[in-house]
Amino acid sequence: MVSDEHRRIARNWIARAFRDLANAKVLAQADPLSPNSMWLMQQSDEKGIKALLINNGTVFRKIHDLEELRLALPDDSKFREHEFDLQKLTELGIESRYPEEPDELLMSEFRDALATAQRILELLAAELGYETS
Image 1 (tube, rainbow, N blue to C red):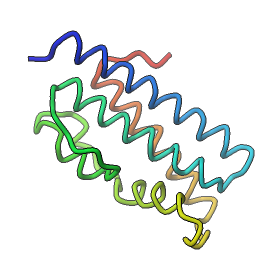
Image 2 (image 1 turned 90 degrees about the horizontal axis):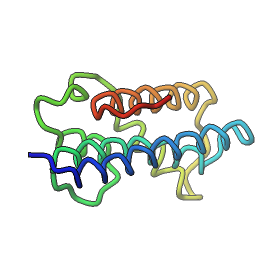
Image 3 (image 1 turned 120 degrees about the horizontal axis):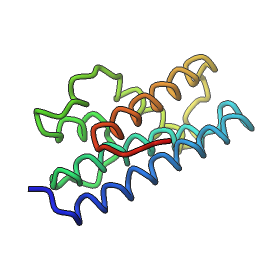
Image 4 (image 1 turned 60 degrees about the vertical axis):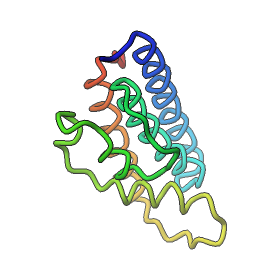
């Protein structure tokens, strides 16, 4: 059974996820291939998935792998029904943190990843019943 405390904490996590995504968009406007923008984009979805896990009372490891987190969701999670390349979003976020990684990301790939991150967060928020407007 989900407690009020779980719901409260999950709402804080999803709110922070939306803040991370908003910051990623601001950075992307200033610097279209900003490594920090890519990191925040990945972090927004990570926090969103973790919000859903927290809301369900699921204990999870402290990891950044979006696919592993998705697999920790209950089988009846509506989010699990959607097909996203979570591995690609994880890689973009993690690789952007290290200066030795080549900056070969095409602008269109980043825009697509940002749009995907937005859609993922909206689906997670809907499943949580979190109002985004």
